[in-house]
Image (cartoon, rainbow, N blue to C red; front, side, top):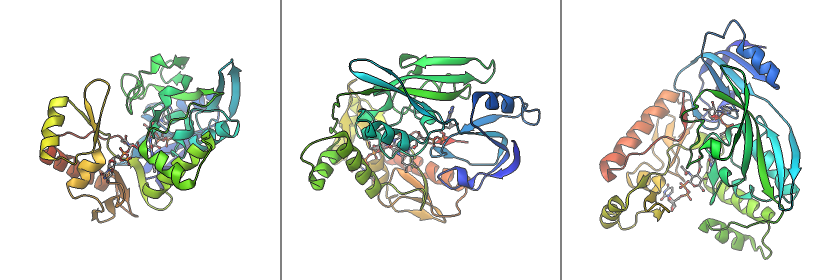
Length: 337
Ligand code: FAD
Ligand code: EPU
């Protein structure tokens, strides 16, 4: 059923009170195709909404918002080392991670508690605590919006990069992801390379490492510094961590010896954008109801009634000040609508 003039506030974790001209949910592919053919909206733009945890609405949406409710989690294959688990795009991500962990299937434990749905996970190749989904992604099925074909994409097809995929670039707004299949390991390969995990495991008194313990450590770390969207509106990191070449890094390191960065395989250095933003004095800043989180400067927040354009304007001020102080151009990670 297509509803008209729907308030999007409950559907985005920033809690922005934008309106959608038309809004509908779909729980099956045929239902989706019918909605795409609906005469009221077929001439207007369409957008797919998952959990709304990586979106900033800067204005009302004059088109059809399609809320993905495709459910189901199934074991679809197995070999000596791996089990293949397929999930509907509308399944909650953390519920899916917990489903895998409960069956002792390893690979997603470091990605515990990331908000949003399974269908958005390949969009920006979600990542946290030393792991990205590209490490376990097997394939996905997606509906082409124009010709209505269902296409299967394997790992290489998706062109995964840091917070990137083909669906944010060449194929932007062209496909609806219907399901995603992950390849989980029967034998875990623990990844505790991210310093904070080992510290937390020690604090928890963990003697025998397990995927359950890693998941709990990640949950504890995330809960301690990332704002809960149920309490303060936000979409996680607002910007990406920028990479700079070795010469630029050397110049920055001389001028700012405490700079937070780590080397990449290609010779570049990844800078912690949170550190750059904090050094510009933004951490804990508040302007009306728009702000920069007091515990994590990479996260912009909506305390209650900020508009999307106020948050966006604040993000521009942050971008400009980082460019001026460090000569580094930040890029927004959140999808701006
Ligand atoms: P949405 O916000 O609904 O959509 C995101 C984009 O994908 C939109 O452009 C939308 O149109 C498109 N889209 C969604 N579903 C589909 C589909 N089925 N087919 C086609 N297009 C689709 N991200 C990380 O990578 N790592 C983190 O550690 C992390 N931490 C976070 C912490 C907090 C507190 C919050 C609020 C966010 C965090 N995020 C993190 C960002 C966010 O959780 C992820 O980007 C997540 O994958 C978004 O899922 P979603 O379902 O909410 O997507
Ligand atoms: N830092 C500061 N000040 C701050 C914030 C961070 O100095 O206000 C420094 C920290 O001290 C640390 C470094 O920056 O040395 C990295 O901080 P943190 O471990 O919190 O991670 P991050 O780089 O800020 C990234 C991801 C997160 C992901 C975490 C854990 C991006 C854009 N963000 O944040 O992803 O959860 O690592 O892996 O890559 C998201 O994408 O929405 C997200 C939350």
